[in-house]
Amino acid sequence: MLRAVILLLFFTTQVIANDALQGKKAISLVEFQGKEIPIGTIDFFTKKKKISYQINIDHNLFKDFFLSMKEMKCLEGAELWCHLPYPYENPRIVSQQDLRWLSHDLLFMYKKKSEFGANFYNGIYYHFSIKGNEIVGVAQAVDLNQLAAPPEDMTTPPITDSDREEMELKHRWLPKLIIR
Image (cartoon, rainbow, N blue to C red; front, side, top):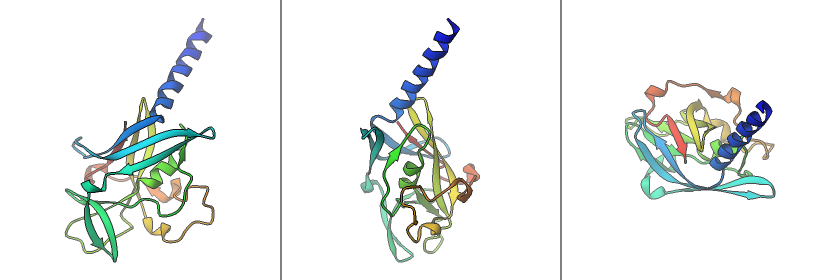
């Protein structure tokens, strides 16, 4: 009997986690105070037994800024929060245990409005985990200058655990990202 209950709990958890990686979901950035800012959608689909995705950012919600000789799409609030999608080809696949490519496609850079130009050292990497039927990303600091040249291995996400650092979330305008 105990074995049956454990198996039921295991499969129920798997179904809930799998649901987070199926169908069309909304993508929202979350302010420190909890207000959600919808920025687009993501479609998950199974392709050759792998879960693939397609992100659709609504760039009409962003303003155009010309920073450091590059046009960027940014949200304007307590800081400028600029979307910098991963600039190289990637397989756009995820699993319950590995959401790193998703993190790479949802990279951002922040800057104070009073600062001149862009500082790619101020990169934001959302470290994702599945919580129920949601995918929740917590902002971590990353130096995006490391993406200036394509990686040798295009099949492995180049930003690793050792490249990211915890940050004082209360000091950032949009410390979370939720997909549901």
